[in-house]
Image (cartoon, rainbow, N blue to C red; front, top):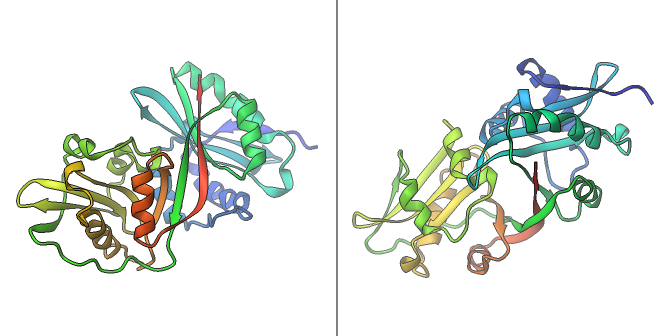
Length: 286
């Protein structure tokens, strides 16, 4: 086997990184074919830092990568795996493991406390690798899809849907049953300077529910209703309003709902969504 070189990335690597990403995920269980602009938006949303992300090279050709987001997670300095891939012809050679071991000293040197990632529960090779590297399961997450766009919901007396420019996160967090995943976190939403829409449901003046969607991808990032106002169709009203903000008109994409949130699962099923895959959220103390 040709010698493999590892190095951290820089901004000039973006074109070849995008090309390698498409190749590495060409046979993935879900569609992972982002355009260059969509890929860059993904990197921004996930807080990816090139100086903390690494790639493997064989004779100057990029053959594998780790894309690492950096930020706070549950009060701790955290690295988030925003994408790990190896091109098909180079798999089975320990490249992903080698990359992780190459990065680890630098991440520890920066004082990072934990490493967080998600992996599809049927991706046995990846799960086995992460377990060998010391990762532990923290949650199981459901990914929902619908074949049709959410239908326009009926109006509700006294409920007004409004655009929100400055979200009141302190209030909104009181609506939560559990913290969203990294890609749907407050920090991820704040990093998206463009391409997001935030809507609130108002009962008179108080906001009693809200939702956040990426208008370009249709990803539903957050949706929550004040507990005292649930089961009154407000969530469905917000969902339909968010659907109308998706520029492509494609159905909303609902990612990473904790399977322990039975009411949330029932809500999406009642609105025409079905579970397509499950992901395992894994973490490792560094």
